[in-house]
Length: 223
Image (cartoon, rainbow, N blue to C red):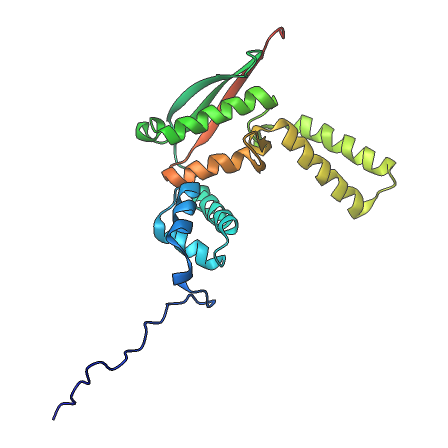
């Protein structure tokens, strides 16, 4: 004989599911997921997973996803980027301007507002920050060798030698790259981030290889 169900008996409340580290998925609010999606352009489940992994910390989740996006972007770096746009931007006072060519893989992405906004940001960066090269790889070997020698001479004049001198040279080189290489410069709209992080962010969202190919800068009165 089948057991008779007792009406009105209390049923156990559903238990919230938890991640491996014990953080309840129910504690991750829809608003937090929405905010993270707006910041990263990633999917809902990816955002929720990142928030769980970072215990609901929005900034930490965004940083985690940025790093994950960089990893994805690295795999795309070898793919051909033959489409894109050429953008011109000028400073607010009209005294400096920059022209930038930035490439992607398809005409579809080249026509998106996300890609166009990136190109405009990069052109404004060039106009404001006056870089000499696109990336570290573009710095000529003779220029790099001269800088290393100058930094080593400076370190030794300060009484540093061996590992201490080598560390000082690397620190100076990092500052040199930040000053002269576009992708290493602090992003003018968010100085806590590098320009390259802004580029990689759009790579992660579009799924395409994106490259800053070249730029030219003009300043009033300069030859």
